[in-house]
Each structure stands twice: as structure tokens, then as C-alpha cells.
Image (cartoon, rainbow, N blue to C red; front, top):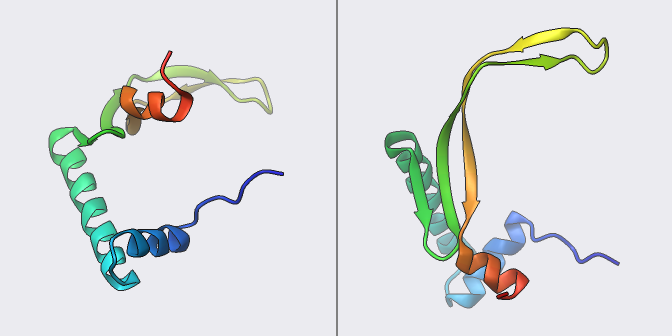
Length: 98
């Protein structure tokens, strides 16, 4: 049986317990960190979470695609996306070092 996913509420409770604070303080810090990360990605194109990974803003070129329902070719416009690149330390911690 798969384990339950960690919800935002459960994460806030866990952060509050681990830091000996209340949920309100934990929520405040989570909101501040999230705000800083998003602002930095928008401004500088990337934000690093030390030991976890980095958020990176990346441009995608325009390309041709296929409508799966009709099979017709469609043009997909260029756009900017945000990707998350996992740090090697995080991969090793979760999967075990090779």
C-alpha cells in the first residue's frame, strides 16, 4: 500500500514541530521562501535550493506538433517555462550513491 503524500498542511505541521515553533510561523517562513524563490527566478532566471536543486527559467522554441484527436499538424508557439533540476546530493540521498 503506497504511503500518504505529504500535504501542505502536514508539511507546515512537520516544519513547526522540527523548529519548535507554531504553524503560523512555519507558514510565514514557507511563504517568504517561496516568494523569494519566485522573485529570483523571474529576475535572474534561476534560484538554488542548497542541497535540493534549482528552479530554472528556460525558453522553448516554436515547434510543430500533432493534435492527438484528429492527427492534424499544429504549430506550437515559443514559450518560457520553469523547470526544476534536482541536485546530485538530493539524488544520492534518495536513491543512494552509486
